[in-house]
Length: 118
Length: 110
Image (tube, rainbow over all chains, first blue to last red; front, side):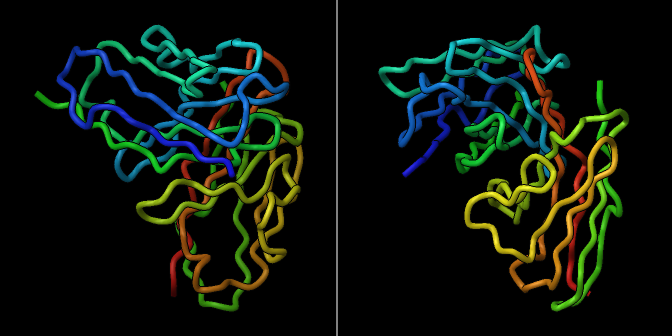
């Protein structure tokens, strides 16, 4: 079955770089049409899409945070990594990885809460 | 940038009632709109993709309609487990891919 699981630090300081890892199973990211995205949600607020990596290793970013993000993959480890530089308290929230593109985000991880505070 | 607006912000209904949720886009998204349900402390769950296609395992009481800029999610008869927040989400239809979520509609028990 398809599963995704996020991992990373629960607490980062302002100006630091956040690195999150999504470890997935049950599908191959090199299969045509497969994609993994990162999506975040500040406490009590709406969802925000951040970045996507596709089956061809093409990468797409939200324009609002594009300059701070890097998404990459390790297909042998079945992992997708997101780095976000220059973290700020407004970046506090739950970060999800999710599979999908053309038919919606059909599988999600449980999310990881990241707090930005000194 | 395409902005999604959802209405109402909160919908207070009783079990068994019909729920009608609206999502409006600032410009046409064709039919590339999805709906998600999120309960407290849980990840979102895909309900509908491409405006009207139910995702795998989604009960028939959930239906989606619309195209262009106006979309509707209908829950024909609310079950106790349907009280949650619902988000719409658009995607671009070709690269460069981008996605936008709406602000959400909370369906709570009257």
